[in-house]
Amino acid sequence: MKRKIKIGLDFDGVVAYNPFRVIRYPVAWFKKKVLKKKGLSFFIPKTWWQKGVWMIIHGVSIFPAPGSARVIEMSRSGRFEFHLITGRLGFLGRQTEGWLEEYGLRKSFASININTDCHQPHLFKEKLMKNLKLDYYIEDNLDVVEYIKNKGKTKVLWVYNIVDRGWKYENKFPSLKSALEYVEKNHPV
Image (cartoon, rainbow, N blue to C red):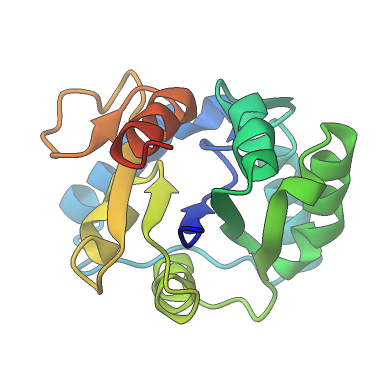
């Protein structure tokens, strides 16, 4: 039997549709051009009210993204092993786990990795991508994609949105569904 193909998936914007993902590029542009921030960094909420706002923002990931059902089918085939690797912080863990249960996706993941220690999301994802020895990692944040794309042997696939679809990237896809079709095409039965 062939070895399982290991696939890592981000949560917001990849497994769960999040309408706020379209503001990522304008926010990144504002941080770089107006605030003159150098390097990649993400805001980590610390106070109760910041965490409350974060829960509301992430609470809009209310339904599965196109292709989520394909994760269930592919994991049942025995050929693919999925790992959820989300930059979501620990205080969103119960919300995330509940969402996965509600949509029947929990059992499709060999591991669920939530950023409980509040590391920078791109560093957290890079570490797990290497530790799990993933063949593929599917991410929707282009800044994260650009950071992790050459950090090991994992092939990084980007799920773009309507705002950033014009950016060039070799392995870009309009949805999780099309990214998974690409993986299956490259690993036929």
